[in-house]
Image (cartoon, rainbow, N blue to C red):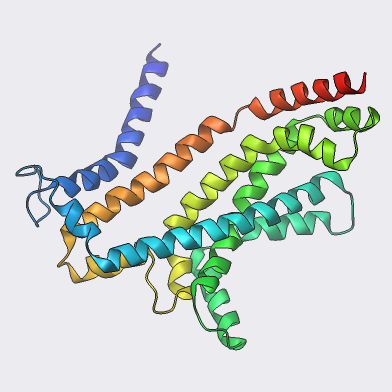
Length: 273
């Protein structure tokens, strides 16, 4: 009993240590004062329209969303393909492929950023939106790959084999069995990849050139210390853009895809009869 109570208290303290600073910085977005002090002297919404009317903030937000969406789309295609190849086929160097795909997530971001920057400079590639996308895609692919291959490993191949045995061709099997099986894993992977891309700072620093994504704008503005209210508002929305996709992804990583795939396989069988 005492051990369980102690573990609960310890867990609560750890969570408070991790999330209390985030909640406090989000509350500063409503601070009436331009100075960060506690307790807050009052609450106001005036900084929100002022921040939105700042063209630098809007441009940085648009760039972050563009880079995140394109990198996520690339990650969905390449990450899914890699997970299928590693899971379905046995070939020489299979484990090396798996290691190389996962490696960017294990490496410090500064190493990945410096390596990409050197590659772009060596080949005479100007830093732009597309270099940011390449940088973000390197670690977004890992997120999708891990989600899809984890779902494939949890699922028996008998559903796909049953569909093919019943006469369904490759596209029908993919549409009615494979895709429902992986749908929640793909959505969860996409949401996590976008969230990770949206608040990435280090890799973006080396691949963006003179362009500012939202995290880079925060970094530049907070160094000057003259736009703290706007920084607080932007941080508020960056946290929301990060927490909401992660929360939805966590809810989607259950077994719903397996249930739908089983039902789809049954429908294939009924049609065949």
